[in-house]
Amino acid sequence: MGLLSKPIKTLDDLFVHTLQDIYYAENQIAKSLPKMIAKATDAELKQGFETHLEETKGQIKRLEQVFQMHGQDVKGVTCAAMDGILEEATETMSDVGDKDVLDAAMLSSAQAIEHYEITRYGTLVAFARQLGRDDCADVLQQTLDEEKATDKKLTAIAESKVNRKAA
Amino acid sequence: MGLLSKPIKTLDDLFVHTLQDIYYAENQIAKSLPKMIAKATDAELKQGFETHLEETKGQIKRLEQVFQMHGQDVKGVTCAAMDGILEEATETMSDVGDKDVLDAAMLSSAQAIEHYEITRYGTLVAFARQLGRDDCADVLQQTLDEEKATDKKLTAIAESKVNRKAA
Image (tube, rainbow over all chains, first blue to last red; front, side, top):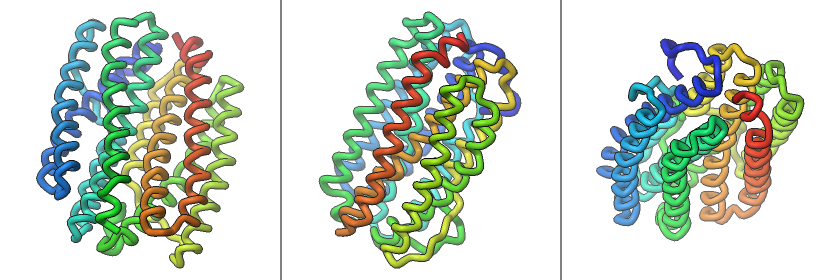
């Protein structure tokens, strides 16, 4: 969360702050996925990243909808966590030569991204319900369900073949 | 993962690299938790963080055991992801004045930490099994199970009272 963000006094402030954090994170993910798509060798993995990119674009739109529903400007604040996760992903990608090992490394990075999203959306849904904003919670829950499904799909790809090819 | 780490050529290299990444991360978590314990107001949350700290110390020992089992020096490499997650946690802690909202914010940070651990240990278990190191996988699986249980416990504390008090 950003240094220039406003002080957090209430759960509502914390909810908005977390929305801004994940809005920044989603936009960074949308910028990073095309590089991962370009580098993926396994066809199913490449397809998985492409689907993830489409979903990310939809999730960004959903966040914009929640900002509006909650009477807030659409805005991101720097998310050091996602910056760190993506920095590691980029570094590892450049460190790995073998294409099958690279697929396994990118898959591991994609799951780290997913889990960050799962934890933040889980928190957002809980905050929204606590604040009596079931309408916002329902929209955010759609994204949470998508993220969990994507994580399961990535695990299945990892276990069924990507790790096997890399070994 | 670190700039000075050795090139990753095989799945075994990637496994060792990921071990080093989470070893660094766990040690950073062990340094951060005492601050969260000191700042927590809700007794159950404070107790939860204390348990997490004890578990983290045990998880560090388990990682040291896996390094040895796999014939590797015990070593960490900078994990930008965990640095980012903890930087956000610290920033948010300093941004929040109200003690109940602070509890909710710290709980959210703790879950982000948990999810990073869950994704990395999940990957490590899968890599170890693929490499035929079921002995290492079994040790790592113990930590993965602990992390998942802790995440559930934190969710229960959040839903049953911390978010409610903050609202």
